[in-house]
Image 1: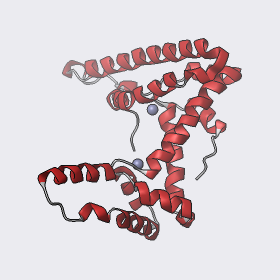
Image 2 (image 1 turned 135 degrees about the vertical axis):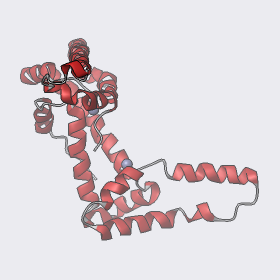
Image 3 (image 1 turned 120 degrees about the vertical axis):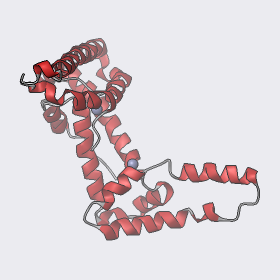
Length: 224
Ligand SMILES: [Zn+2]
Ligand SMILES: [Zn+2]
């Protein structure tokens, strides 16, 4: 299953008012994969082999299940279930049981959609660094965004060398933006705390009202 990296999507999400444009990009990519897995096209041989080997994580099973095509999900789960029957053969000792427990846990540790998403996000991290080095306009929107969640901040740091000769400038912009925007969020959190004091009960909350959930997004990324 190929994935086309959409530079238009990057530019659009960097102009969106949010705590992390990468979380917004990931959401779009995830929706596209979920759509494909709910489509019959997913029953192509190569995809079937992947589903058989890895299956889905709990979160992605839940997202597939809440989609419209239950038959497609059932067929894929049937494929996956038939691949794990060895886990249920007789166990003859406590030592073997420990081994089997590890195998059972391992069978739950992979996800075909998570793997596809990780692959495409890696391309986005690289493309963002390249766009920064190449396009003045993107340089500006990068500098003016509201920063990144910590997991995505780490990823952008990791792939910074993709900015080539502009790597130093890229790292400066990345850390400047992150430090400025963390201070901004901290200010909003302080305002939230002050305005929750009963003496300030009538003061308008403004941006501070959503400061706490946005702090969660800043730390852990956006999950929905
Ligand atoms: Zn993020
Ligand atoms: Zn997953």
